[in-house]
Structures are given as C-alpha cells and as structure tokens.
Image (cartoon, rainbow, N blue to C red):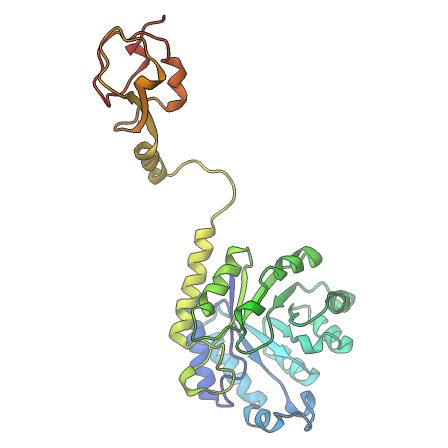
Length: 330
C-alpha cells in the first residue's frame, strides 16, 4: 500500500509553508510527497482565467531544489514525485533527481511531452480523470514507444470538493481490467467530512493499493487547494487508517486457525446434550436430544444420527453431554 501526499499549490508560493507540508507528510509516514513544479511562462498562456493567481504561486527552481534537499535529508525514506507539465521543469527535476513523475490528465493528448517524460525511465503516474479509454490507451502507447517505465493510473473525479455520488469507485476495477497496470485513487472529497476518510478506506477495501491525498498547512486559512486537503495531524490519522485497513484486509487464502479462533470455536460450537432427564434404558429419539453450547465442548450435532434408536446405558440429567459410550449398539 502506497500513500502519496499531494502538496499541489497548498504552499501558496511560500517556501516556509511548503516545508510545513513536507514535514507533515514525512512525520505521517507517507510513502511519497508530490511536488507540482512548473515554469508558468512555459505552462500557461496569460489568457488563462487564473493566470495572475498562478503568478503568485510560482516558486523559482532553486527554491524547489532546497525543498527537495530538505525532504531527502529529513525523510530519506519518503519518495519525491514531480508533477510536471513542460520540458524545462522536467529537465530540472532530472538534475535533482526525483523518484517518479506524474503526468496530469491535461497532457494525455500531448505525445511529444509524454514521450520525453517516458525517456527518463522513471515510473509514470498517469492521471486519467475525465479521460476516455482511447485517450488512455494512446498515452500508454506513447510511453511504451520510449521506454519500459512502470505505469500507474491515477483515477479521481476532477471537482473540488467531489460529491460522493460522482466518485464511481468501481470504475477503477474497470481500469485494472482494461489496462493491467496498478491503479490508484485520487480523493478530492470535502476534507471536513467523514467521506474524506471512508471513501479512500472503501477504495482500499476494493484492493486499490495506491492512495493520493491532498495535504495542506492549515485548512482553516482557506488558501489555495484547501477544499480537499487534510491538515498535517489529519493526514497522519489518514495514513494510520490506511495502514490499518491494509492490515485488516489480510489474505484470501485458507489458513490454520489462530489461538483466538480456536478459543472462539470451543466457546461457540454446539454439542449434543440431553434435552430432559433421561433414565437408563431410554431408546433415544431426536426429541430427547438438543444441540447447545456447552463447556467443555463435546460431540457436534453432526453426530446426532449415531445416537438415534440406541439405548442409554446410564441415566443422563438435562443438559448433560452425551458420548458414544453412553449408548448400547442396538
């Protein structure tokens, strides 16, 4: 099970806030933190409605290098994924170097860029929200033209926050069937609702082992990308929940009973007992016997036919267990 802490733009263009978020992900035990690294002049045209906002969010590449160094020094076991959207940032990320790349669904029809990312040989997390089967198939084909990079498909409904009825968790099973690669869930539920926890838990229960979850420094500030983002303490609880669900899933194979299960069987399984006081010489009928919990456990109800029509050799009090030596061989 692999948990990705998605920082997105929750840093609000402030490196200090970015460090708070990195620390929250690292202390929580996330498997990876995801940076969105881009050069605005190469990624977006000024005609974009939120262009001026993006200008405030952009951080210089040397700042990203410092953040990378901070993460690797403080949390060496936590991988760093770079979500990139243009070649200059990609080239920069290769100098760090990052552990994997995320390609946003907006680039699924960008063959040149996809091939360039694939040429790095790093794992590619391909976001496929609001994408057709044909678009995904084609993008995977472009990756395979350039490399044997591992491919993960990340599915999420692209609305912040996502309404529960829109999630369609089972579509991830179709993605697994169609493409035979690992599939992950990007949860964008309202972070202030229980769904922010139980929807990912439901996905884990379905066998979806990759979870991408937004993390922020302080959701109450209502900054950028806050709607679906957990605070650091909440993110720690989220990771703990994921690990617990993973442990609870266990395995599907038949196993020997544990000591606890054997104890429960001894307590819960029923035994053959006398249904009333039975004098010696009674020819036993089904109405004379009951199946009840008893301690210690005796013969199971499956042995009941072995008593029917047999004669009791000695009296039995009500609720007393019967053994085969209690009856003659009539």
